[in-house]
Image (cartoon, rainbow, N blue to C red; front, side, top):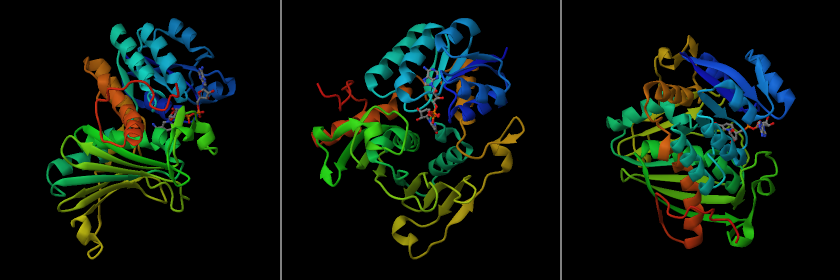
Length: 367
Ligand SMILES: NC(=O)c1ccc[n+]([C@@H]2O[C@H](COP(=O)([O-])OP(=O)(O)OC[C@H]3O[C@@H](n4cnc5c(N)ncnc54)[C@H](O)[C@@H]3O)[C@@H](O)[C@H]2O)c1
């Protein structure tokens, strides 16, 4: 029988979850909830969903759901996921999993106790291009993987860490076969961040309406130690976007390089390969595109070429139907948020910080 699925939060990202649930086999999108009736009706009309709620507890009590997508801002992911778990519903949460690790731990404990899955929707790693890049690297296409670089979209680093940063940590976890440690340096208006620079994300990034909890710093350099022995480097700093949002990993190996970037004109991800390591690339700029057969992107007769939620939702569906843990479920759901905390802990201690992180309280909470 198809999984009865609902969505809480009918804003921007819910479009991607609704499209995923409406197009995956063995999934029925049956209910939606938002406190804003206009947002609720717009999204529910788009997908002809009749069962509409302004109270998620009521939706959970009435709809006998198997799965819910949690698509509100981060501070509500915890309460909604815990309520879903109590109602016996599997949870696919948007990123960041929460604004703090203590709440994330409570979400995981509630889901474990109820015997339901909790997974976080870092969809990048599940896309065919990311899967193919990993397979190429594992097969030695770029020699020995040495490092992965990622750069933010140009927003203030403390805010960006909770936006793209968590996605990048997940990418690194994927390509580096796990993350062992984090070392970070954070500045604000040119000086090293101190406790006096801690503020709410909406104060730091005035151009964005999302609530990412308390944050610090406009610039960050984060070094990531991979379990494989290779490194990740993440740079978040303010800049103007002149050529679109070029997010995507640059994978540097001893004998070549790979990049996954959205095409600036179409926004669709492309993978590029250079058969020279970074020290030769400037002199021999031979980059060639690696294309997959179009069928690799097809689900239910449609092509899903960019980093669409359908890829993480599909992994969640399969896990529920097969009785497995989703790939970003269980303890893996916590990793990217743990890296956020470790970034701040490392900056304030001035040392490398090992994962899994011992400290569970928010490193920026002022007691
Ligand atoms: N995975 C990705 O690539 C990706 C992309 C975009 C956004 N996101 C994440 O998705 C989340 C939502 O972002 P967004 O841009 O869609 O936000 P949004 O503001 O567009 O939508 C949030 C919706 O939640 C609703 N809401 C608030 N309180 C509610 C409640 N108690 N019950 C039900 N609904 C409630 C709001 O009315 C709003 O319609 C954020 O955590 C964001 O980081 C992830």
